[in-house]
Image (cartoon, rainbow, N blue to C red):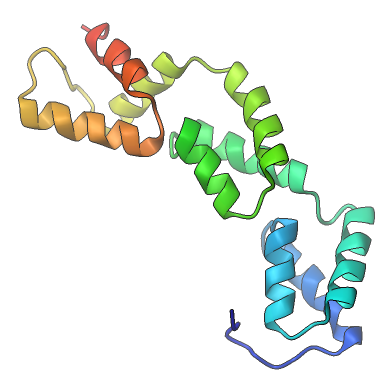
Length: 160
């Protein structure tokens, strides 16, 4: 994968470049590795810089995963399987994803999260009076967010 700026980095420029990336936003270890390899940095230099960033506290996959997952859950953007998929897409290991989601999802009630997401997107929606088309639209929206079908149906039917 080529970066927009394809100018190769010298070994002296690798650490400041990685640090500059991390001042803009968080990255996972995998994403930093991708960014550095796109700038033609050797794997040995990548490993050295990543180790240094982790030791100094600038790069922490667990912390970033928790912040990302908490933000996604709080905003209603992702939940369940969709959240797991988005975290894996961002380069988190299966172990980090599993630990993070086990902790965060245990604290939340999926049915109340479904109600909250549905109310934010479709205020005043009533399952009992809605047309079949509107029901499919709302259910599809919630499923794309990662909610399970049974939780969606429990939330929508008990909302009345």
